[in-house]
Image (cartoon, rainbow, N blue to C red; front, side):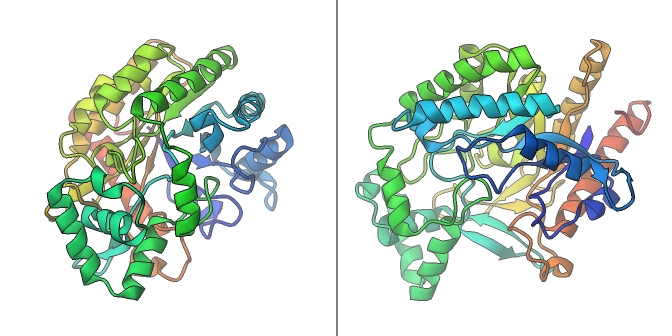
Length: 408
């Protein structure tokens, strides 16, 4: 595997030097300062690539490579195919060309409406004092039905879910309800800014009449234009699964299960149409066999986010929290074996780039990082711990099979 790390650019509190010292060779980054839907120019891409790969102070290579763009975000007008979607589409295609011109050939993206990953608590505390991200489904219902008061929200939930949501709402005071709203509506760099409830309702209204089939059709239409260009340029598109992997706030989610992945591959069969294997996102559903997904679609995995999740008890069975990378419901050893086997297959086939960029994701927040101002889920020590566990797992699996402990 290519040990990789998500870096949010010059404003990231974690430096490239620290990342290199963690044993990383691949940087996963994006031009977060450019608003979603605007052009990434060759000049801006080249400047970021040089920043990652060349140490100006010491006048030497950093030892790092910009391995994956995460993300080149898809504008909401493209997802809905409304408004100025054609102009935004043309901009997206040109940004792909510009990335190719600079040699950044793997693009991670998602097609989740309005929100990226959604959590209800950014600091759920473990017994050892570290904290993790938590998605509590009763809190999702409480926000949707009783705080946001989205029109028609009650019809999206079962009686048990509504009862659990009401109890959660009644447990919160005004400050707690505002904190829950702020947490759910937290934006991700380069996608959307933090939203107010009013802005969120406006954005949800854009999806009136867009069900799962229509959204899937819009995704296929998007890829029908992007993938042939990628084939020409030697680029790879790697779609990120939904997080959480189910409909939320009345919005359809269309990449939550292995059947969803298969439908997308069948619709756009080019190998350039690939997958970001996010084990934590798929692991948010108890009925997803994540290791089985890794094995089934290994030849389409262009990038991997390896993290683990554990169920948290509630009355709905849909809540989960992040856990240690080698703990939780995902069989990480089997997933790693699938990644390694696919790399070996690509190497034997003589493929130019057999290694798969793999990054630790959503690390625990440890005390040593609490004053750093890291984005939730993206602490230094927590991801460093996760990366060490993943690299150790890879080395152990290779050694147990009689091979070299490390392979690139």
